[in-house]
Each structure stands twice: as C-alpha cells, then as structure tokens.
Image 1: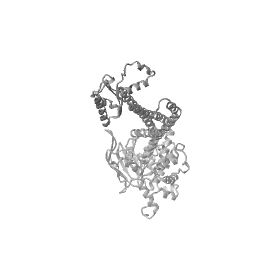
Image 2 (image 1 turned 180 degrees about the vertical axis):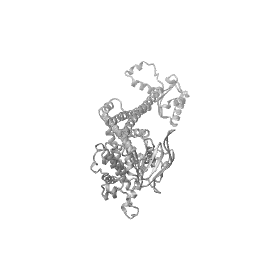
Image 3 (image 1 turned 60 degrees about the horizontal axis):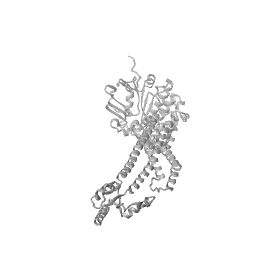
Image 4 (image 1 turned 135 degrees about the horizontal axis):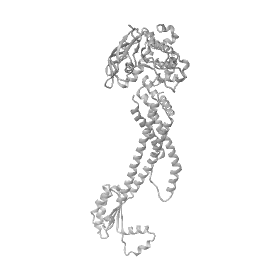
Length: 301
Length: 282
C-alpha cells in the first residue's frame, strides 16, 4: 500500500510538471546515450591496444663477427629474463631467415641479386610480457658483446615511441571519456535535482499537510526520490532503445563488412544486453542521487 | 444558549455520538471494542497526559534573534478535556504559542510539556508521532486543491501509514459527523468557506487526537458560519479532546464563556475561567 501511495504521488507530480520532467528525462537520455556509445567504444579501443601491445616485439641484432660463445651467452641472458617473467617468448632469426623474410616483402625480389653479400644481421625476436618494460629488457641485454651496435637503436630496437604513443592515446581516451561522462552525469543530476526542487515547490502544500498530520520524514521524501528515479530510468530506457536502433542500422552492417575484408578484428567489446542493464541502473542511480541532493537542501523536515 | 446544551442544539444521532468519542468511560473496561480502540490510538500517538494536564508551559520564553520576544516567561497549565481560548491582538504571541505546542520550533527558555512529553528533550525523529496526537486547524484551511474532500481527509491517514481498510471505514464516518457526507466527491474550491473549514476539522479529528489546536479557525468566515464551526469544535471537545483555539472573534468568545488566556506583547495578561474576550469595563 505504501509503495503504491509513493508511486501514485510521484506520477501525480510528474503529470503536474510535464515540461520540467521531460527536460530532466531528455538530459538523462543524452547523458546515458553518450555513456552508451562510450562504454563499448572505450572497451573496443582498450582491447585493440592490448592486442597491439602484444605485437610489439624487441629486435636484438647479432653482430656478424660475434663468436658463437657470445651469441650463446646472449641467448642464455634472454632465457634468464624469460624465467624472471619479463619475456613471453623469443625466436632466433638467422641471416638467411632475415633475408628470406625481406625477400617476401619485396615486389621484385630479383633486385637482391645486385647485392654482393647478405647485409642483414641475424637477430633475436623477443616478445615482452609487458611492452611498457621494453626499456628494462633492453638495458639488461645491452651488456652483451654479441650485439651489432651499428644497427638501429644501437643494436636493440624496440618500438618505444610507438608503444608509448599507443598507451598515451589509450589513456587519453580513457580520461577524456571519463571527464565527458562525469560532466554529463553531473548535468543530469543537477537537472533532475532542479526537477525535484520544482516538484517540492509544486507540492509544498502536500508537504506542509504531511508534516502537520505527522508523516515521518522518509514518508515525505520517498515520493520525490521515486519521481527522480522514474525520470532517470525513463531517460535511460529511451536512450537504450535509440542505441539499439543505431546498433541495428549503423554498427552491425559496418562490422559485418569490415570483418569480411582483409583485417581480422578479434578485438572484443561489451554485449548489448549487459550494456542496457548497466545504462538503466545508471539512469536510476542518477535520478536517486539528483533527488537525494535536492531533498537534503530544500526539504527541511 | 446553543453552546451550553450541545446535545439539543446539534442534530446528532446517539450512534454518531458514540463514534465521535473514541474512549469509552474507564468504568467500562470489559468492553472489548473500547479497549481495542484505545490501544489503536495509543500506538499512533505518543501523548500520555499523566497527571491530567495536557499542556504545561513552565517559564517559557521564545526569542527570535537578539531582541524580538515572541513569548515572555509564560507559565500555565491546560487540563485534559479543557476548552481554552487564546486571545490577544496580532503579534501578541498566539502563533508562537501554537508553534511551540506542535514543536515547529523550540522554546528559548523554560519547559513545554504536551501530553506528558517534554518537547525540549524530544528528538526531531519523534516529532511526527507527537503530531499524530495533535489535530491542527488553520485560518486558511490548508486543503489540497487537486483532491476531493474524501481524498483530503484520507490523505492524513495515508501519510501516517494507516491501512486502506481502516481508511475506508474512518473517512466516511468523520465526513458524516462533520456534515459533509454528500460533499465527499467535491473539490475544495467547490465548497463554501465554512464547508472547507469543516473538511479541515474532519481531517484534524479523523485520528481522534487528544489535543486539537485551532489557529483563527473562523478568521475567514462570516459570523453565522463561524457559529457552526464553533459548535463543531465544542462537540469535539465534549468527546474528551482538549481544544486550544486562538482567535480574535470577540463575540464568539463572549458567547462561549470558556477559559480565556489573554496574551499581549508575549506576556500572559489574563487567565480566567468562564470568561469573556476582555475584562468587563469598570
């Protein structure tokens, strides 16, 4: 009965200020819509970055003149780093392998016949566990005398700048997205708060009578909180519907054409069902928080 | 003449009279219905006038800010079941007196005891339960415009957590008692001022409070209508409910010859039983 009373009062109040309630609902809708596009995009980028990171290998070039014992010592050092958990795996690429790989990338391999000898050094192709620790691995291996210091990166080449740039972009997307969402959520909370404030004003006689006849403070507050939650959830549901339509019409056709092409996209993102649940809960929470703040400020009980 | 013998001048059935009185005489403790009624009321309200005093003011002073005095060292006591007029010009402290009674604010000094409860020591959380034991009627009725008469009265019960079944029983009962049975589905603005005030009294009395406070209840009404409201309040008083009525209405007070408490500039200037609005001219 009480819950019924709270809902009836909340709906009565929403009907009484339709325009303001709609404004709050639309704000929540926009905020939730952006949240709803951001969450999957962010997770997609994050997943892509992780995949890129795993492709970032370290090349350790071996000098042609290095004696076999020094090469073996270098390999032992790599194995030691592997056992420390810094290196995932490594492979040795001989001078011949390197030439063959180079040949395969050329459109006209016959130009190689112009070379008097094989200029490519042998190398170790090292896959780090965490690309951010490439530098640490490089320093550890630097002492070896087998390294061909004439090669790029003084003989140890790793995509320091690429790695860092990818990580920076990923972090930027993360922070920018979080800031954007925070701003929108604050805006939504304030607008819901404003709706509730007007609703308190519109219902001031009710509130006065409730106090006079001895309604408890929570009994007075609940209809307003439920009103806020209804605004939040309705806004979230509308935006989930829009997101679903956008997914069907725009995202799904694009994804199916792009995966059918050259790139194999194994980066993953969130399922729509989970996303919808998260968004609706977020909408309700925004509504509850918005009305809660306003009640603290404007409903002295 | 009408004020002295309410049973003759008010057209009331004896059945209605029994319903109006929620507390049967203590000499009939075996009546189960009466006992349950009393238990129900005690659970809803926390007022328990122990020594027979419903209201005690002991050295009560209320200051607003630095030098505005609302009430100045008032000491008085109102017994359970009394009918008291609170008179005095505007700004004499009548409203302050009433706001202290329902703990809308606290006294600056002194003790206010209502129904055996020291309001100065009462926590904010208990105030709703204090107010369930006090009915309030105001000059401006304080009815909810978008709701019917029935809904207005039911609202007071709904927001204090009464069961729907009990609401469906109590509301028609109180509307019949206040002569509003045929107006149940009307909106407040379709009613006359006197009828609206009856609705407000019905709402204040539907829980059978032990104390009914009326702040200028006839302030907006013409003299004839005022008499009708007065009769209703008097009838409520006859059921054992203490009534404190603040008023300007000299004729009404003179006619009733009840206890009069007169305030002026926040001071108690007169407290007399069976009195008129003003002391007789010398």
